Amino acid sequence: MPIGFRLVALFLALAAFSAGCLFDPGEDSAAPAALPFIGEPPNDLLPGSPTISGEDSPTTITDDTRSTLLPIPPTTSGPETSVTIPEGATRNTQPFEIVTEPTRPQSPTTTRAPATTATGVPTTASSTAAVGPTTAAPPTTTTRPTTAAPTTTAAPTTTTTTTAAPAGPVLVFAEEFDSFDTTRWTKEHSTYGDGNSELQCYTPQQVSMANGNLVLRAETRTETCPNGSTRDVTSGMVRSKGVTFSPGQRIVYRVKLTPDDEANQGGLWPAFWSSGWAGGGWPNGGEWDGFEVMTARSPKRTVFSLHYADPFDQHKKTSKEVLSQTNFSADWHQLSFDYGLNGTMIWRMDGVVVQTVSDANTKQGWPAPFNQAMTELKINLALGGSPGPLDARALPATYEVDYVRIYDLPR
Ligand SMILES: [Ca+2]
View 1 (cartoon, helix red, strand yellow):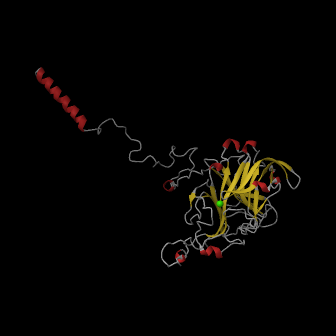
View 2 (view 1 turned 90 degrees about the vertical axis):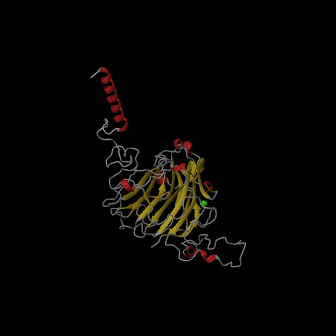
């Protein structure tokens, strides 16, 4: 072939080859034998994938649960749990699990209650009749503030609310702490807590009201308590009187620890609890810890516990610890506890179930003593003691309670 034709042919061949490359992308290109994640979203990892679980992951993903995992709310994270299970008990063998409330709506939302009365109550008129043990009926408002209806004569509009009340918790007791009701609460004046080597003298002046909240204030001040013991720090505590919290009821309370100073709050011990209602001393009489935070151990840890005696008169404790991502003091928290008729008990923090107990090997036979009404609620801000030393920089500190509400649960 003449050299000219050879050059033309070569040129044409090169052009054809280039065109083939342009219009036939990739099919025969040097692609890897297997592309990663093709057709699979990044979160659709296979069971056991090493990339999804880790130290920071609060949940271990298994094949059965990965499609139904719930988002972890910002206030809690597991699985920093410490569950002491009585012998023979079979529950709670898994790490801390976050479960959203399946049915019963958590009565009051976490939004701050209006300063006045029992708002957010699922039912209205019926709640007055079902008033609990105390005299002071919850200041329910059977009729809405219709009043200034500018028009029409048909005033008796009131009936709009009633009708068939939805099956749900019914408010039977409400303490909104708009004022200090001496018919319901007493201010402690003692060194209560000596058994835990606590440091404070509780004095009535450390209990006050502000902005619709009960305020327990702890500070450095020398006080001589009625028993003659002089303490360098003082704090506040209240006990309920005439208030009973019975099986078949739910108690809800909203609390705040202040200040939120992670470095300087060691030794604070706020709690909401009851004990001794069943008689026979401690722990036979029972102890319920609605919540407690021991900042000397961790300002991020909240503990939910029961104490009781086993058939051999030994102290037993069933406890769940929840480690949050932020200090407990970082925000207000709404906590609740369902005191089940059949011994099933459920703690919630900010609407999330954090602990459920449905059996224990108690001296009296489960669910006793947790089948009797608690007769005294205790709210206190202890200092130092068995959880750890008090950091002087933690004071002054306050523990505030926005409300305490008790509901009858549906049966
Ligand atoms: Ca309040």
